[in-house]
Structure formats: C-alpha cells, structure tokens
Image 1: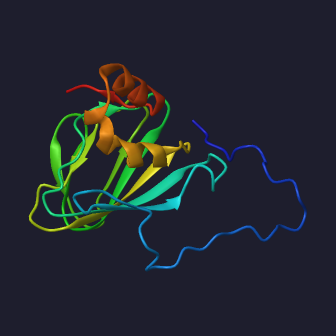
Image 2: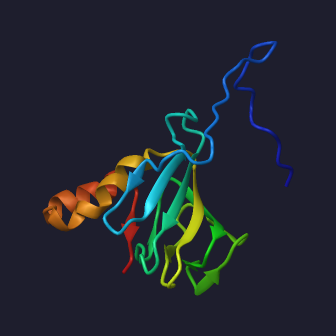
Length: 162
C-alpha cells in the first residue's frame, strides 16, 4: 500500500505568517479540584480541526478515566515525566518518560496516575475535536441527571465499557 500526502489545502505562492508560539511557563488553561492541570497546546479551533494537543500534569494518585472508546477520533499518549498507567485494550502498562501509545478510532483505552509521584503527558486527538468542554465539565457528571450525563458523553464521543 502506497501512502501519499493529502491534497493541497494551501494554495498561495509565497507562504504566510500564521504560526503560533506558546512559551514554557504559560499557565495551565484548566486546574481541577485534585490539582491536575491541563494545558490547551493546540485546540481544534486553533488547528482548523486538524488535531488537538493537550499537556496533562497529574497530581500523585490522581486516578483517571475508566475504559472507553471514541467513534470519531484517535487518541495518542506520550509520557513526558513520571509514570502513567495506560490500558491498551488488553493490558495495563506502566508507561514512563518517552513511552507512546496510539489508540485508533474505536480502540479501547484508559489512563491514570496511581503512583505517589506526579506524572505529565501529552494527549493528541486526531482529527481535532472540541475536547476543552469535555475536560472542563467531566468533573460535574456526578451532579447531572442520567439523561444529561448520557447526552454529555454522546456529545463528546465517549463510550464507556466499564
């Protein structure tokens, strides 16, 4: 199978000034009750829907979501620091700095920090999806009615298996 580049999407002749830079030390975009922080490095809005890239800095023993899958997006994890437990659909692995997990659309997965140390990792969604609202509101699902909770997860392409 030969894989080629996609069709042209930029049709100018000289290129354009359109890059965006986010310096280290930029405050997190979201901090949840347990102290875990999420940095919105590249959102679907800023990439025109190409991808979404987020840095998650988890506190010790922060836990994480149960096994789930997505119907419209793939999800990739790259560990920057600490130990992140990743579930690849078959087994849990203790992923360390430099480890990577790609989860295709429909792939079962989960992640968590069960260690006594903080952990930091990147999550890449492709194509881009508006995950910011998901990150910001998932902590409130316990206060939602069953109907609201179902609607929330459907809206955000999250299908639980546990």
